Image (cartoon, rainbow, N blue to C red; front, side, top):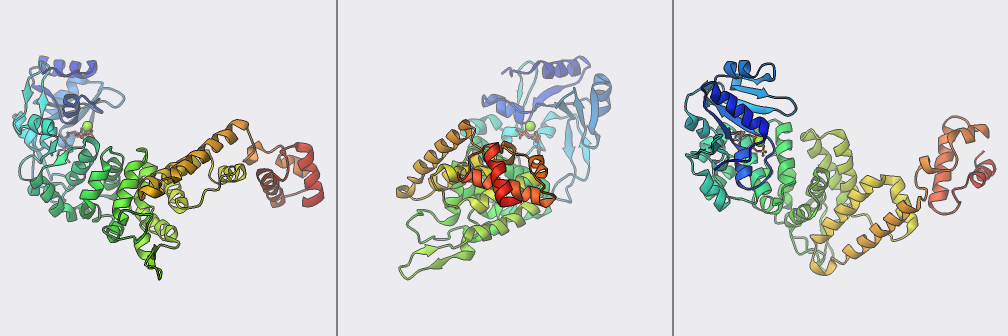
Length: 440
Ligand code: ATP
Ligand code: MG
């Protein structure tokens, strides 16, 4: 079966073979090509030792991982060319203490994580598939290569890679592999938070995140213990047909697959178990749960070393996910002033997803959100003023009137508020008049 190889990958295989080496495409690109998905990066595995690869492709080759036999060939993202290898012992549950090169492709495939990632295809379309990856691929199954407990113990990151592939591809995890994932989960404590975050982002943004969140909260709970009280937590509420965790999973899955949105929905209701109360009629309430969610979210995002910009956006979305929407142009302008257009759009997406995950009779909030979005478009199109940069007067207009220092900023904000609330038109003459009378 001949793969649709990009020209530069074919060229690498040809040159390695011409120099007398074996060379195969391997790993995720083979998997994705067989699934008819566009492969992200292409990986090549070869019998050539790294030094031979380096000299064959000089000066377009970089020794990016010589210790593990990896040379990156070509500019841009490059193709990783790795020498057939066998991994030695693992002591840190992440990386082999040492690797040994081997002349055997089968041994190289045996060190790979899942059968669907352990297939190789040559330039001429020969397939090497000693672990029956093709069968698992057509059955939609993720199965560890070899003994699953041992494989996750060697490298615990494979646990999260497995969940990420399940979320992205919609594959089921084969029962022995799934059981080993659950048993091995505590080993995730050995994995660097940055690596955990990368995989978690991949899991959250997969098309099949719902199933993964519902099936593996105990695994995620190893590094997100804050989610565990939500699992099975009955809301005693007519608004909710789900327990807190099931609602969370449905809400995350209902949002567009943007990391900040999916994280915000993962975190939005974590404060519920800690703020739960029952009234005399037996109805559940979670007064101010958003505040507690924000504080748990902060802890989690810091633990995951989330970048500052995403962190800020996610926290705003968590904080405001439950804030009421008033349908008026004034409140649209106020919201634009407060959040800016892009965060406001994200907030509306959070509200939509949150509401879609509620009990059927209460999903009519979708309509209100839709009307609010229409109004937002109208306000944006009309060029109405909602920010200082649109205001018809500038700081130097106010200094010309004799205002100084922080008084200038305060006066500008006051004028903006008057305009946003519709009490003054955004006209220079009128605003200056008002400033002279009221703000000097
Ligand atoms: P993606 O589509 O996310 O790139 P991938 O399967 O290509 O998925 P890579 O990280 O690019 O993943 O790795 C390429 C190949 O290397 C994998 O398909 C797998 O064969 C092997 N591999 C990567 N990481 C591991 C690991 N931690 N343990 C075992 N094999 C691994
Ligand atoms: Mg890859």
